Image (cartoon, rainbow, N blue to C red):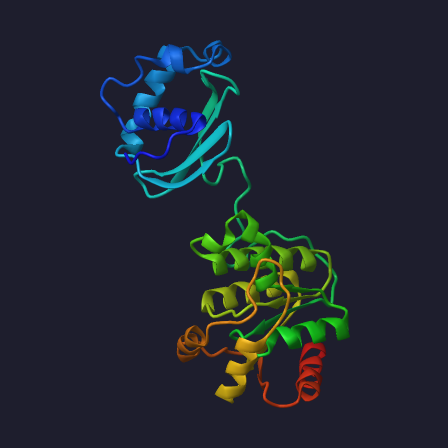
Length: 301
């Protein structure tokens, strides 16, 4: 197992990980490592026995994430079946920093209700008499979708939930380093849309929506909630205008960037899948007033 820089909590966590790694002779010092309050509940020999037994599921230990505080440390380790579990360790505040508590839990605890489905067709929703709409503004950065989404939301009194604002709020918690931030945004947007529709209220989602599976998921959500599904796809036919918008924008989104990467947008444009069905396609080179009027007609139709 890889070793990390020492700190009291981290040093104790590494001791636990050694046990999960099946290190020979591990656990002989358990009585010295575990605090009295801990051993009063779980005898040292029992803890050693359980930890050694768990080694069959983890060894060799693969650490995929680590969080360390003054008296706490947590490691995300990969289970043999590919899932990730979290090993938590809390130590005493004073020397010798013995382990006060420790536990292993799934990254997604098993006692939670299931996550939202990929297809809402058979999902249990309360019956809501509503004329609500689920509106998706789709398009790549700099295409003008956020400007139109905000204007339509203000005109119609519909809340707008935007990916960039959601991800910016996660930046203080390491959001810039998450493995799949767009998937995180999609899950949060789906939850927000569900909450609005269940309340009988319309919602606008401002998201690139490049994944066809996400499009179908949101379409099924609208259908299951008895809401109208409306899509506005924004594109800019003039590459120079598009690039200027992308690199010159100033939006003031906390924790997020203003200018975008034109090369990245070009690559994504080349593989951006066409929308099927109810989408309104807009070339945002035209005056904004004309685009907005077309959007309003499409949403309220």
